[in-house]
Amino acid sequence: MTIVATLLAAAVARLRAAGVESAPLEAQLLLARVLRQDRVWLAVNRDRAVAAADRARFERMVRQRCTRKPLQQILGETEFYGRRILVNRSVLVPRPETELLVGQVAERWRPRYRRVLDIGTGTGCIAVALALELPRARITATEISARALAVARRNVERHGLSRRIELAKADLFPPGRVRFDVVVSNPPYIPTRQIPGLQPEVARYEPVTALDGGSDGLSFYRRISARLGSALAPGGLLALEVGDGQAAAVRDIVRCALPSAAVGTVDDYRGTPRIVVASVPQR
Ligand SMILES: C[S@@+](CC[C@H](N)C(=O)[O-])C[C@H]1O[C@@H](n2cnc3c(N)ncnc32)[C@H](O)[C@@H]1O
Figure 1 (cartoon, rainbow, N blue to C red):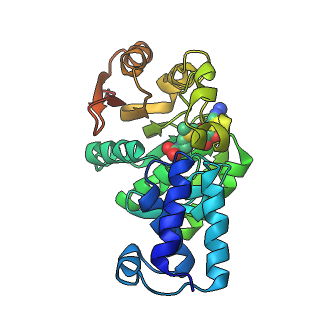
Figure 2 (tube, rainbow, N blue to C red; figure 1 turned 180 degrees about the vertical axis):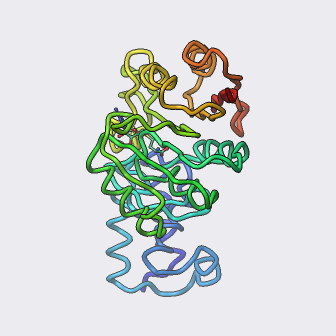
């Protein structure tokens, strides 16, 4: 008879040997998923026998995680801004830093704002979180990858937001001459040559289209900024997530594009400048 405690201990040892940092937590999350329970249940049922079919499913998941496939891809979902978001190999796994981006837009939201553009929506996590936080927002979310867009569509539908979030397969900006009150983006920002050296979860399993920011990592900030003069409405707000060490350069790019805007940065929970925000004055 194999019990919960024995299964977990063996899985933790294997995950640790494979270089998984939070092996105990991840083993619990995987077994909890297989048994359709939560981690507290595991803690109080350590001596409970686990059926052969569940052991086999758990074994498959542990084996996948040992290849450094991201936990969220194995589970098929993650939590973002308190909401469940579907993920797969076609999309970037939403990161906690990006919750800060959503928080900044929600904090700076003005009652007169309506139209929001989310560039490079991936799972749709930013668009979904903003739509749920800001009931008056109407969001256009663009994405270059058809596979990512399919994931975004499922997330938008799952949260009942199809009428308020329009998804568009587009290169950064949607066609037409619409001006947006808010432009938000977490664009690809890793310098190309750094991608192979990233942790295996990212380098092996996340789509390169979601990571590659060109030779210096800043190419998307330049391309987005070049269009802001015509895409951002007077009195509007821009909020961009940036990579480590990129804030000053992105601030300069945005200042050049929006000379009259007040441009600043917001630090993440580790004290690293993570969000560049710009407020355009009203004419
Ligand atoms: C860093 S990921 C961010 C995904 C999601 N917004 C998030 O914060 O988790 C960047 C996204 O931009 C998309 N992307 C890359 N190039 C693009 C382009 N030219 N136009 C629109 N989207 C693009 C990628 O496919 C990817 O989904």
